[in-house]
Figure 1: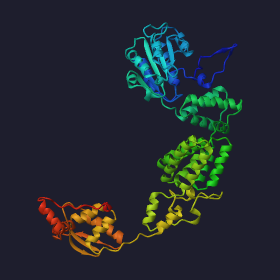
Figure 2 (figure 1 turned 180 degrees about the vertical axis):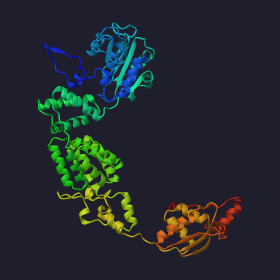
Figure 3 (figure 1 turned 90 degrees about the vertical axis):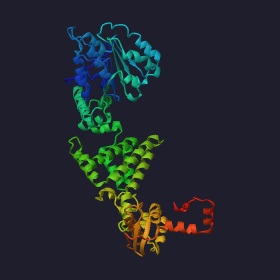
Length: 565
């Protein structure tokens, strides 16, 4: 690369340079070479330029995004003395002075690196802090770099607190961790925290292309895209994969197929074919495609991950169709993907996502991942033919006319010519034609019409039988009946009756009996409520009367039977 200096940590072996992996060879040597970390670079540059240098820095992020590299860059920036030996702290270290050279080669006596993953105890921290009181030997600052700081024990953290809060002016601490939540708040509050972001695939793609050109390797664009995607935001992971791919090609062109085979990935077009077969209910074709990809070296777990990624991308195309205009999209995604996203409904995609996510954990835990993935695909193929709950309810309400399945849609096809029913149907989701036979028979059954109640008391009993307990209680306690005929009810509601009581009662009676009922509110006095009538009848009972006489002031309450709830 023209704008990237090669790391100077070369080891000599019989007069020749020992081979260095790409991740070390192209380690950034200036803040400007850190890709994808603009906020961190801007903040550190301004802080060093203005002299606002903190006593502690906390660098956090996933593996391979540049935490340790940034720590070393900070150490070089603070201790750089310039080519003439008279410079001060600078965000652009010269790289040639004694301090910059020694730090780059990891041999500076005043820059101490400690791996907290292997040295976790309080004794290790005490040993490290013993030298804090002494001034640096040759550098401007004595810098302590602690990697994977979250691995320190509780006592080790406590031993560090006082020194970290009030260190000598010549001491700086730089911590790096991938598990920021495991670092005590007392430590975080004493440091300036910087969250290093995952590096975008486009930035990684550009970086790998530049390094490949510098190394004299020819790598296809598709291969670079695969490596950038497999890196998952980590420059180190991606460079390791690129290094392996170049070695595998033995000086020849690095092809997309070679990288795909090396990573155990399935071809993108084959992933679309597999998902298409599953959504079509063609189980045999889906299993054959899975077997072919497995025989070609694709990992069953990775195939499920590819299907998950595809479902996620299709879902995003449903909610944000403008994403299809992204120039970085491959032709397969631009054509087949957009068409598939338009034909599959959101319920189908969300259901597929949940089934794949559950199947992924099953495949990882299964002794035979291939068989676990096969079972996931079979479940998805059969579930793809099921209608959504909304479709079933709609078909039941319409009398089941649209819920009658065809003979070919009763189950997913096991033959090679199952067709693309679910995907190519042209509907936004599987239609009600795919309802199984028992469901269809239920849908074709018309609701049973009950005989019309002959009295108002029978109306109340009907509501209680239908588990409309609240309405039944209002009818019994707060309704003064004025007129009752079959299909007509007029009443005067009490103060506690709901305002829409008449509408609710009329609607439910019409639905249950199949006969139109008119329920209206009038201003006439009306008869006593059914509850009041029951109370009067109870008071007239000789036994109740004798009890009331024996216990003056006692009141009568109705008790609801257990089967009325």
